[in-house]
Amino acid sequence: MSNTFPFVRPRRLRQNDRIRGLVRETHLNVEQLIYPVFIAEGISEPREISSMPGIMQWPLEMIGREAQRIAELGIPGLLLFGIPNEKDEVGSQAYAEHGVIQEAIQRIKAASPETLVITDVCLCEYTSHGHCGVLHNGNVQNDETLDLLSEMALSHVAAGADIVAPSDMMDGRVGALRHALDEHGYQQTPIMAYSVKYASGFYGPFREAAGSAPQFGDRRAYQMDPANVREALRELEQDIAEGADMVMVKPALSYLDVIRQVRDHCDLPLAAYNVSGEYSMVKAAAQLGWIDEQRIVMEMLTSIRRAGADIIITYFAPEVAQWLKG
View 1 (cartoon, rainbow, N blue to C red):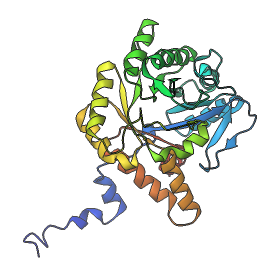
View 2 (tube, rainbow, N blue to C red):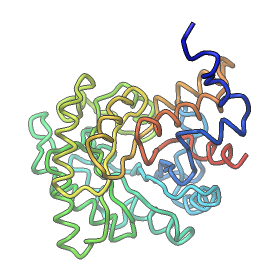
View 3 (cartoon, rainbow, N blue to C red):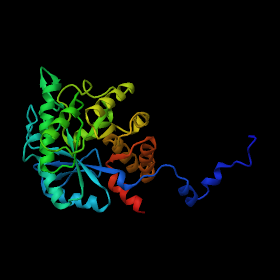
View 4 (cartoon, one colour):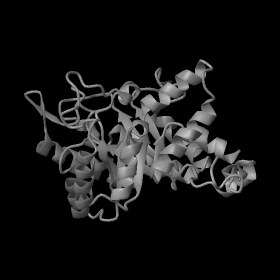
């Protein structure tokens, strides 16, 4: 028996909800949540994503009302992903003036002006081959892709986006976007960089949702090896040097150690993306009655906060907002 027992009893601070709340170290608030949404051309009704129960592809005509609903829950912002009717080799609908995301931004801002609109800047949803950049001989061309990503970001901001979030993992893309934005008078537009994005198996359901699966090969030539963390810190440093205002780790749950190291390494606001596979596993287990969904989700998101994330991008955001209200 310890020399300090029975004088030191940690259980004294665990005996009821009021005491536990008083000494709680990590807090999860609705203001820390961002909700990803999918907007599709060519549909007239919401279409549920089979591998992501409760998550929809939204028609343009309804995205304003959905934005209002999310805002009424207290969730500050949306992360937008678009599914165009037409795709081509260079993803031209990604930077078209009247593309699906450009139209969606305007509808959201008209319906819910205070909603923070964050746009994913990547070509994979718009290219016929499903890769994140321009292809030559089956290889993604880094520097050619930067020009198109810059056009994409500019078109989003011109339509009313508040924050752009490059997820493509091309080298130098933060600097290219910062230069393009500044040159066109958008010096105040923040960049939320997907600085540490791993080539993960947890993205499977997203690729159904966004119609963005590669037609051949995979993305390991530009997304990060899940085994590496020192490399993650190099990616982080480069994005900060190029002008990132916020940084991100994606996925979240299998990379809590990476979130912690990124948090210890920099003082910028840090987002973590609780991705589609993480969502779908919980939903599947809950539907089978194997877990208490609310308890599991709150524990998961608290772990992401505890690891050091300031912002959590999660498909659970509407449910969590309601649970937090009690």
